[in-house]
Length: 68
Length: 68
DNA sequence: ATTAAAAGTGCAGTATATGACACTATCAAT
DNA sequence: ATTGATAGTGTCATATACTGCACTTTTAAT
Image (cartoon, rainbow over all chains, first blue to last red; front, top):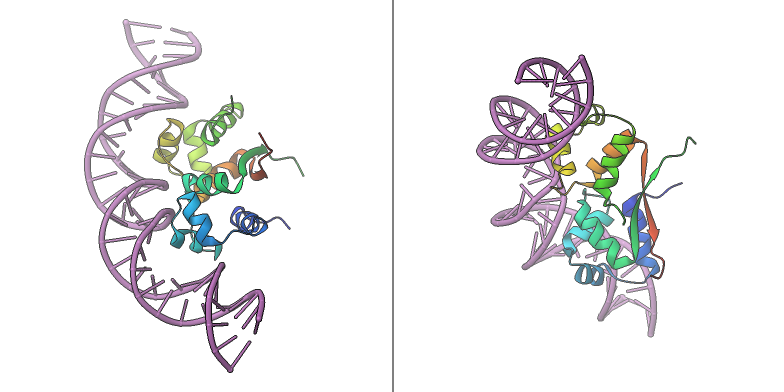
């Protein structure tokens, strides 16, 4: 059961015990925007994703899919 | 020298020897949109990224950044 | 049961991503 | 030098991402 990108971000935020409000402030992403993602709505841009990931100490990587 | 996400996608397309036009058609991403990305402009949405990655056999992963 | 903090939602304005069309530029071959 | 395929650009219309504000709901604590 692999988590979606958004779910992974949400999990990471919780591991770091940061509120949505704090993450929004630190990352520069609007609180309304963050709330939307975490409640399963929305379709973030790469820039927004990167802002969040940078703040959370996450790295976005592309891997060649293995032939299961 | 780490490549940007977009650059990695471009590289992958070339490895597979697919034209922008083919990739656009297969992935469902507009040709104009794809051209924009590969020429360094634009800020794709996650959905668009995933369409491209799916088609190219790439997987988007989030990793916890190692300390330095 | 109260309370406070955190998370989620409705609405509305602004910015911008997406996409189509037509065009130009570049490249690779003969 | 021509030709054909591929890549890049200008403009514009439409869709939607981003955001703030105000509000409600949920969660977690005493």
